[in-house]
Length: 486
Image (cartoon, rainbow, N blue to C red; front, side, top):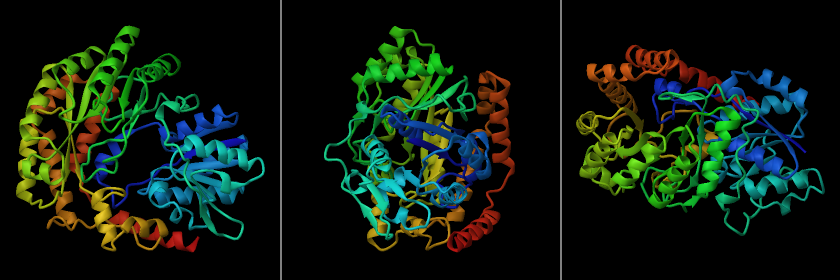
């Protein structure tokens, strides 16, 4: 079997949690989910390739030309709920041009498995883990085609009936996954806003997060880590085979198991890997001893989920940290020579312009190197989404089904309008980044012209461009009409 996977480009969405300019400069990352699917397929004797159309700036017709040359039996896409319609349009274009079946997977399939196939494009969906479903799907596709026997699959029968099979009996182990397929990716083109070294890539060393923050889709899910050896082996492969010198670890909570984190650091040090890396951590997961070891092993940035400068808000979103812990951990991290980024939420329950002003003031007082202010959004699988869906307001399901136009989501937990939230979010970015001391510090730290240009252009766009969605709305309206016209 020949499986081709396409990572399509996508435009800014009105329901995004980030501002348009922030999303634009957020980064260009390898399609890691597709890279695992490709590796799993090859592990079971099939041929696989990935076309990263987003990074390579390819049009749908460009992708069709490449696929014609490669001659796949099946074409796959990663379906996020945010980008569902745009990905569907890419898949439709390729299916009409080549006549190949379409398989999709990703986050959206966990939430809306059957709804994702209620269109004239998608033939198969991988509901949960690709580890079991993909090999069995490919086996049946080139054999007897008994798709009812494939665990964790949603598919269409010849009569159009949509069928979902039970998931595999045993819960997957992340340690069973192969290393992601990176051999055909444009590894020299990936970067994120704070990137200092090339080549750059991302990794995931664990799945799940046992904490229960109300705004997070991973809250309360099982912690599922890879072994220390697997993690550092992958780093070593990235270093020697793909010239990687900087890695961002995308785990929800990399440092939640201090013993494991310390062991990973020890192994990096033992192998003398000249790797710079970043990670995400809770405020209460790190301590002085671990931070010292992380710095020695190459950690240069930690992204902390801070969320708010008010204890009442932290309690309301079940963050289970204190303002005092935030101050102490950020100061300790900086003392150890690791740069700090704080994630903050805008439009939290009971938010007013005054409460958010207090959060911005708090963020400034911490001396953070970077900040990200995200609009609190009821994303699928969060407790906030469940509450809204139970009340009969499931925008995401209607969006997948094509029943509503793309729009900014309701935020009934705050009296601030979406326009006001956009306004105070942009103002917060400007106030934080335009301080003379901040600008001087970051200018002196720049290590290359490419890094300076990326940050300078991003700063200018934030300062000068208005967050105007009017043109977006017209474009989305035309796409909505095109969606229904087929």
